[in-house]
Amino acid sequence: MRAHAIPILGILAGVVLAILFCLESAPNPALSRGALVDRVLQIVERSHVREVDGDLLLHDGLDRMLRSLDRNSRYLSPQQVAAFEQDTEGYIVGIGVVVGPAGSEEAGAEADGVPRITLVVDGGPAARAGLRSGERILQAGGTSLRGKRVEDATRLIKGPEGTSVELQIETPAGETRTVVVLRQRVSIPSLGEVVLHRTAGGEPVGVVRLIQFQPHSTEDVQGAVQGLLEAGARSIILDLRGNGGGLLDEAVGVASLFLEESRLIVRTVGRAPAPAGGRNPGVTEEEFRSFGRTSFPSVPLAILIDGNSASASEIVAAALRDHERAPLIGEESFGKWTVQDVISIGRGARDGIVKITTQSFHPPTGDRIHRDEDGLHGLIPDVPVVVDPELRQLHYQWWDRRQLDRINTPLAVHEEPPPSAKPTPGQASPPDPILARAVDSCRDRGTSPHSSPLRKRPRKGVLPEEGASGDRPRHREHLR
Image (tube, rainbow, N blue to C red):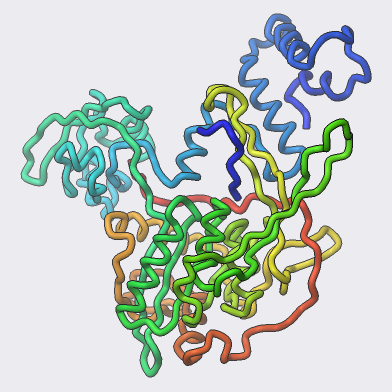
């Protein structure tokens, strides 16, 4: 990881930081803070009634200290950095296969509970090693996978980047072979699906579901929208439900696709370094405006949000609504109005990283944001549609599965019947009242994204400096 800050969207367990921050004077005034922490850890490791892992205690304490600043600041230990990088950059380290739960009909496993490969990622390590969909994995690293839970099976397949795993494979014809696969990075597309709905008595509507704002998300959305328009779509729905955010630059890029050039997308406010010789730091502000990727400035547009749409999702949704480019349909968003910088502590990530809130962000006008005595919360949709929490979880599971099914062709346009707001006999997907409402709105709206009375003009306000993480639980099958 780069050593400089990358924009993205307490007390220590035991006694360590209590001594650091609660004592008015240290026993030895000349003792540095680092030396003090080291001495206390030595005492704890040597003298506590139970054996203590000092490194684990320190990492946990640093994280608790940063969490006390706000809900988004974190310390990530060296062991946590890899997972954080993979989530932010949009990749996993593995062999590039999708394996469903052993013993499930969906996974194609037999009664003996041996997991079967349901998909091989094009160009990934497994594909280069000759693995194919439909084959079963009998062993991984010399250990039988027969009857194991999928979590346990995939744990044996996973491993550090650059290492190899020996797999015993069984073909559909019953033949077995041994394959050695190198574990490497496998990219995960930021798009979940690209769908064209041809409606009865109305214009075709295109849907682009964006999972996360990661590298190349702007290009992905641009390609998906262009493909939908070429397939006949007359309006576009950008689905940001469950999208917990990501990279600030990509949020600006996605919003720029739908705005005329030089429109304000977001303004960030942070603390400037104190001037030389001074004690009080100043305030720094920066504006992010739409730039040369303005590809669809007049395409009718609607945006879907829910309680797990956060950070970069809220930047895009608020900017496009404030500029009257798109109504928001669905449920109130999470309400995360801050930007975090990721800063390496030492060389690379060997000493962990700090993810710390450095800026607040402010939409162009800040229309329709929930406010109360505690401050600002989420974006209030122009068309509210309430969804049962259990149905929402079904949506997340369904979307994760769809994303993996289409991982090799993320920009391909799939034609499907219009979504239903209620359960329909024979329908594989769960009912989706938010999407159904949006499709109806776009179908009947004509050529203008705001020809129907969807918007209201509420009061404006100032955004707080702190927010919370919009991460939602993941329910995807196991891509390894």
